[in-house]
Image (cartoon, rainbow, N blue to C red; front, side, top):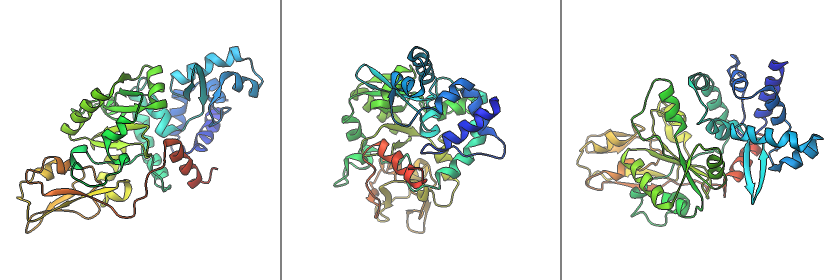
Length: 351
């Protein structure tokens, strides 16, 4: 019975925007069995992707609200479903595994979970590559685009932050996972930002703390000093911003080993080096996380297809020989994350 319910839950999770593919090893089922009780699995499959109050879920399922309300809240606290608020009302919905349930496990994960996730990651990666719209993108460091004209608000990290009313910061799940697996990263861990509904969810679940704009800017400065890459949600109004390293971030680790990482990252910018100004000091090579810079006969240059537009190389170039330029043919991001996952749903033929 329990094996059957997790097989059905796997199919249900795969029907959500980002998908949840099957594997030959069954690791995806073991993950679900670790996270969900059979009762949690059954109730999850009866939720919709639209937020509902516990009373509405109870009425739709013909069950007592007094029975379902605490169960829904318990599932939300465990990060198995997503909770939003409308004033004093709490609303619940089924939610995709990534970005979603996986990230919500930052306060509950253990070594076993991390090992299973690492085993599952290649299958998730192949699934993500089958859609056009990514859930995350890369934007340049603020210092890298100070002198660049007409930079859109959605590509300026401080502008993205300024428009937020509720900000939360918590542990980076990628760096926490690597530490649990015995590969501790020296980069700061509390640099995972959430805004709006995501922030409220993390605060309610006590897996983040609320911060104001000034502290957010200080933490972003710390991220730049540490050489981390800014990866906001792929939306004009950001729902989250990750500060990523290539030793821990699952996505960046994978693409770094590919011949042309830029093909798998959505970014509006790329770096160019002025050979006349370059003194071949090698600082940009040390700073680049994608091995995108090589020495040529005259100076250093960008390797075609490797620059992902993070701007790390610009920030410490002593002669200002490196600048960020706009890539051609890149569309503006969706208006918000709901629009992003709706586009993914359409691309997967689920709508």
